[in-house]
Amino acid sequence: MGAKKKADCTPEEWAAYLKRQRENNKTSYHKNKEKLRERINAKNRERWANDPEFRQRRLTARKNYVPTPEALAKKRKQDNQRSRLKLAGLRPETFEVLLTLQGNCCAVCGRSFTKTPQADHCHDTGQPRGLLCATCNSVEGKIKATGLTPAEFATRLQAYLDNPPARTAELAA
Image (cartoon, rainbow, N blue to C red; front, side, top):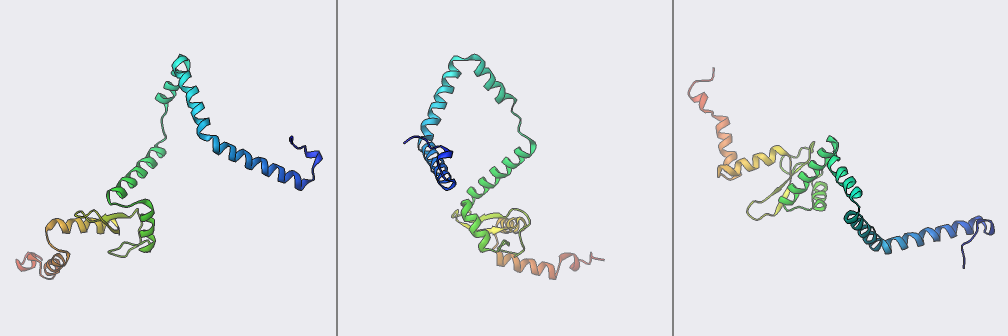
C-alpha cells in the first residue's frame, strides 16, 4: 500500500494516518539510534583522519570554546552537590526523600533550610544520618572533635554560661 494523499481521505482518516506515520518514524528512529550514531561517528572518524581542514575546524572550535561564567558556576555547584552527596553515602533520590521526610527543615534545630542542606553521615560507619543546616553540621563536627559526648558538652557549656570565669575573677565590669 502506497502513501495516502490528503485529498483521498476524510480529515479523521488523514489525522489517523499522520499519527501512525509519526509513531512509525519514532519507533524506527529509536530502534536504529545506535546504528545511526555509529554511522555518524564512523563518518566523522574518517573525515578526521583524511580531511585536515575538518580536523583544524574541530580543534579550533574546542580551543575557542569559552563557557559563560553562569554555566561554569552551575556546573561547579552541581559537581559540588554530587560529590558531597556521594561522600555522605546518599543518592539524589534519597536526598529528596530525606528532605520531604524532614519537612524541608534541619533535623537538629528544626529551622527551614534557606540554603542547600548538608548531608550528615557517621564517619565511623559511613551511614547517612540526615540533613542539617550548615551551622548544626559544623557544631556537630566541632563537638565530636572535643572528644566529649553531646550531653557532656551541653552540661559543660551550661555550667560555663551560668558561671563564666570572668565573673569569678571580677573582670566583668
